[in-house]
Amino acid sequence: MKWTGRARILALGVIAVAAGGVSILGSHVFTTSRAPAAARCSNDPRRALGCYEQRYRSIVAGQGVAEAFADLKARYGADPEMQRLCHAITHAIGQAAIAKYGDVAEAFRHGDNACGSGYYHGVMQGFALARGRTTLLSDLDAVCAAVPGKERQSLDYFNCVHGLGHAVMAVRDDELFDALHDCDGLTGAMEQNACVNGVFMENLIVDGAHGGNYSKYLRPGEPLYPCTAVAEKYKAECYDMQTSYALGAVRGDFARVFALCAGVGAPFRKNCYQSLGRDAATVSRNQVSPTVVTCKLGRDHEQRSYCVLGAVLDFVYYYHSDGQAKAFCAALDPDLREGCRSAIARLVGRF
Image (cartoon, rainbow, N blue to C red; front, top):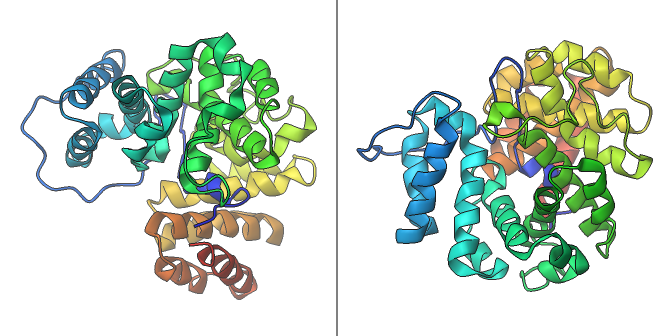
């Protein structure tokens, strides 16, 4: 399958609701069986992430990556704190995997896309921290060279170059503007864009609501920052992610974020509306009716149509089929259905 354009970003299914200590990353639920009998980590946000990281690093070291994900998925449905921290937990699994296998391509062979593909981001962060800033940045093109699928731009290859954005942020101590400049050192527009998107995604993840450090490049009073401050060539990738933070800053008020996006200059406000559509699908756990209701909060056809586009792409990636996506299109007002169905046809052709 070839993953092209910003549709790949929507496959991550990521939303961060970062106000009031609430956050969701990769919130799509798993179908779980009976959870293993072991103590749940504390629900104290100061302790929970460290506990989960220790647990899953230990499982990877002693049993393997597959066993770590099996344990996580079995516990996920009954553990709200795990749901909140899931993306960050899978970062730790990825970091443990690169320590175990020592090679990016080998670690990727054991991967899992659960919780917004955090595993792959963790692999790249662990690789980067082991190599150090100077060694990593001296030849970014070499890092993903052995990962299969470069020619067809496979999901694994995308996850690698996207993960480089997370990795560069790690060695740059979360200095966003320096990391963006580093991504320019990659050869190829797809590689640069994927890396840049990883930088912006990591900027959301390091928010303290996820158990990490607060980013100085997030401003609750200016929810679309840093997109408002970065160079033109980075704005599309930034707006593809930033609504997830903006929603948290306004406590989940989609109508307010539609209004914020309306103030973004063309052509980037379309990215903003489409990102909000992805968030609408994710918040509803990819259920048709609530997603339709959320996109109807758009005040005009442009807002609603791009919200629908972001949402329907997320439906296809989440279910890996077009059935639920077609049901979503059928539930829309007539003026939105054709564009919705056309998006499905274009995307399914890539599977």
